[in-house]
Image (tube, rainbow, N blue to C red; front, top):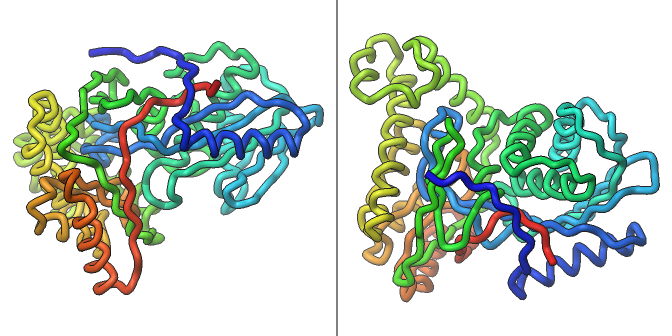
Length: 396
């Protein structure tokens, strides 16, 4: 396996330069100084859902959409942060120790600062402006992209000497302490370490990853954004995590990662069926990741597609984190000869489906999906054609 730890300073594609210029201009207008600028991407996850916090396997990739963040030291005794997409700004002291009740993006910012100071690193007040082109609520990890962008920018600005691995662990801790979501490490890892035209076969226990080539011009990755986010999402996420850790504890192992399917079957009588099925899903999903890696190495997208459909079925019926909107979109994909595989992606209860689609049939597939979704729910979906991209980096 390859341990990824290289820093880059790269130029973004032309389309992203417009966002870069907008963020940089806003910063200079607001604070009258030139900033350090960072880009941090969102992520997709090909397969391996809800396995990361069970110390299992995932297969994510950074994408070509993300957060652009401008940062510089402040002359004031406090920090100021501005989110240009929603025209919001707030100021806070460096020693802010508690999250804002019902706070959103502000808590991600303050959480990163809190965790850096907790590691006895020294920073001074700073100003930050950020904006992005990640669709909100789509399950593409805009929060991890923001956390990574900020910790990367602060590391550069104050020469903290943090490695990329240390940075993503700080980002994850910020999500735990200030956002209240007990997330695994996948989102932060993929956003930080992603490589173009690859997926990352990540072991969430060892935090080592193997770079797996992922490019086939015959097929493309299409996200269908359901535009729904049911309010079960965060509470259900933490509930699933507690359920999994409870099963592992009862069976005397550190995490579900340490069980095999047969051992769980042998102990089935110890658990209610609902709990048993959730644990079984995690073990089966880990196996699907391993098989997906083999499929990608063999450029076997038919097998990969079958695994995607199987993953969605498990998320729908065993782990019970899907919803009728996502299920409809996957059903549309399943009926198409041009889509070898699809599944819901992310924590669940809304967001996007990930679809592997014949490139020459993208338009017809999207049209069909939009028509069927509109007929069923009287709502519009949005489609995104994504490509794998490079992880968090400085922008020149």
